[in-house]
Length: 403
Image (cartoon, rainbow, N blue to C red; front, top):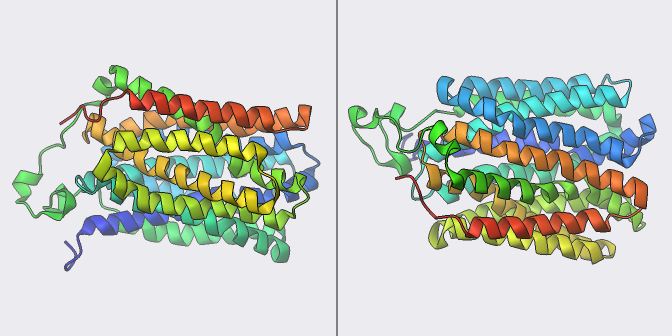
């Protein structure tokens, strides 16, 4: 405890800050889309590859960073990740080609978020049991608020500093806030003589390993691979709006600023989803809730196909953000329900390689299909169908496996 405040909530705040800075930096990409395309004369499919490469890396590397965090504790791993993000953004300001942007931004954001996200959210799971969904939701709300605040802030900064100066500014901010977040993280309540959710316990009683399945046992379990397949299907479409909603809006003669604000509205909806849906899921079942938000994400994507004008696109952005936020809040909590906490960060890391595959495929293929056909209809429809199939898979899984 810290005074009358359970230290687990300090850990939630630290994880929130990690998500806010890391994903906020990543999701500034829509503000840079048009300046980079103009600067280097690149097509939408090629520019989309910058974000997709970063997204693939930061989810794929969770398999490594999760195991490192289980062995070394979260602080050195998260600290390394936040440093990579900040330095990668600063290095990107010196790029003289789009390939350089892919290297500096892609590797900086990809490695940085890959080494900070899974260890931070995995640590939160260890501090809570009864309120795990709520705690996860509040922690990953940092992604939603970062998505809401960072793209408009980046667009404003680009107008005044140019895209190169904006990369330097954001890199410095990430380094400062990342250092603060890293200092606040603590690996587990056991190390502080506590139990999950704040019950004090003798140090000897708290010292045992957390309950749950070892990573090898999890990887042999059919439920894990069904969950993995659902994650991949859902996430083919999850990141398409983050990259293509702004250019989609510009195709309807909306301004670049309006397009960037639409991406920010995804962040508004996402923040609501993370704060609200995690707590609701604690009461009605995290597995059923996860299935529902996947299904509704698919419905929202189908609506995007026919949405015309700023107001209709704003409705889509808010709704999609709400369900995306619920997905991000619930997937780690439901995974902990299924397999326990013994190898939580490592399990999450392997699971998020499914998200990596979807992140690499979705935005890049949507851009390339647009370059060929001049339309986003077919890629969005395929993404929506993937979400619906993912919801059906989750609905068939048990609510709990490990005790």
